[in-house]
Image 1 (tube, rainbow, N blue to C red):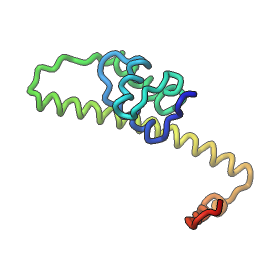
Image 2: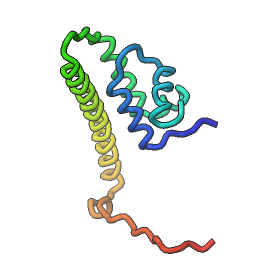
Image 3: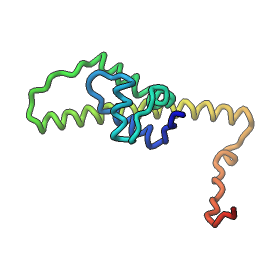
Image 4: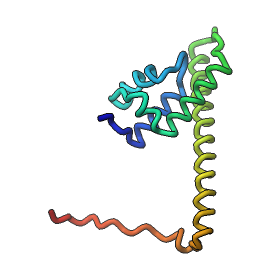
Length: 136
């Protein structure tokens, strides 16, 4: 049975995609995951996560629209340029994720309003966690 990715693993895969250069395939992404999350997830496992799937599509679109220019600059400038590109890609991905979350919030807000839930109901504190020993 395929391993499910934890939230931290999904975040790390998205970070891999933020700095991706060259041809992108599900197989190449899976291989790139091995040193970072210590497993090579299947394409289906990677595609199951909306964050990874959307980041994958964004990278494919970026690579198609903006071919990498050959930089003939000093190594420090090349490193700085690569870092700026990676951070720009990460920023775009996070903006898209934030937009999706805001859209989901609007749906939840509407559904709560239709069902007559008040702000006080929605803003209740979560119950405390009993950290005592469990009997078993």
